[in-house]
Image 1 (cartoon, rainbow, N blue to C red):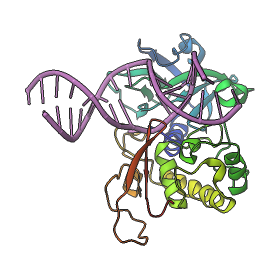
Image 2: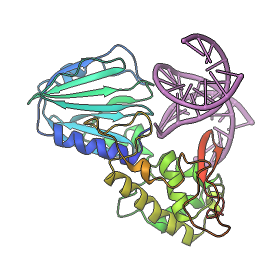
Image 3: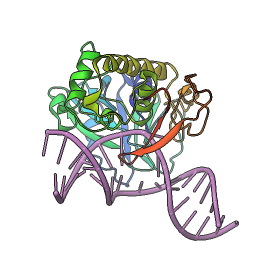
Length: 278
DNA sequence: CGGCGGTCCTGTCAGC
DNA sequence: TGCTGACAGGACCGCC
């Protein structure tokens, strides 16, 4: 569920709520996630200060004042719920709860249990296997049309499917791959290696633009996703094609009114405009 | 190594 | 109302 904009929104809320506070209690549920939650988290966290929180791809990284840290991934249905000054009653699918000084409570909630929580270290975390092969951050200085073009050149699969590969560009998921391809006017079926330089330029700009607008909207709430304070994101109202099969396409291209189409690529839905994305 | 399909889970919704 | 199947913001694994 959460892609870069949703993870960024949640990470920023966690940063405001947690940085500088001390972990005072850690509770773990019994259900296992994809990777078992480390059993020794309470002793590792309690008494430590949350020093710094950041995002890499779709992961949230939490660093402690002793050089250790935690990586969180929300999978498809994971949520973080921040509550200050009140105790949230335990709910089904709550897997982990942190209490921090100043009466702050942080809950990791994930019905489908595709999420992950594992330990990292401040020194060398980037060499962890989850991050070692991870691609460029779309908001980094090095990400531009020329780099995207070089990356796409190496791949023969459809550009839509390739954009979902976190080893190329980190943080893009199904929603924003569809939206960026629409904005750039690139066909999702085009082999990645056939994307031209100018198309890659437009696509890189579209990726940044779509992600930036989605972050400003607090992410996209389709089903599970909420911001950390429970608020809905509202970028779903800004979708051009995602989840809009059969609706009138907003491209305003030639041929008059036409509908947004849906196909399956690599087992995932792709939404696109048959007129603009040729 | 790239590409593809299956799998991990639970919840929700459409259709009968 | 109840059952069934399809589908969902992701990523890993094993096979060619």
